[in-house]
Image (cartoon, rainbow, N blue to C red; front, top):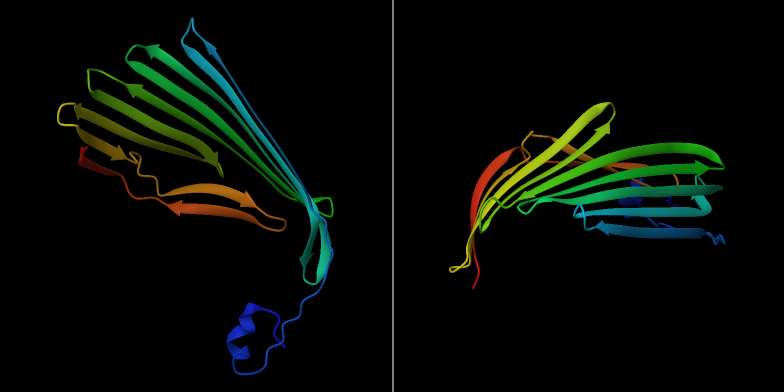
Length: 205
């Protein structure tokens, strides 16, 4: 008899019996989303707000025992778009993510992470674009700042885009995000490429 993946290799050399239990289970999931925005012509500004609430309740099997579990996820995300001048635009957004998990009404995890994103787009001359994209969040008392810069020149008659890009200016090593299930909270850490500068030419036909 084998019950887990760790004995799978040995089970190939002998008989393996898989056992399945019929466990009636009802799970409830509630999801609420909302979004609104307002444009103010006098200041050429758009203010928006986005919210997402997700709650899941049910029973989960762990170590041959059923537990009542509950997950609560919610996101609050205001944003601001301002046309500062005829050649300079800005976008700012804040994303506040909260994750709470419970087993038998006992809190098992309580995670919050707030991300700030600021983008600037400048058009210093015809057919030219300079963009700065940045993101900031604080995790484990560590400040994380990510910045990319792009310069693009377009040759209209030949339909050619020439781009000079500098990615990961502060040479960050990792980028972290979170997800959760009934018993587990995943911390996903992505390994980033080192700071790099490159030139590209794009043709359109």
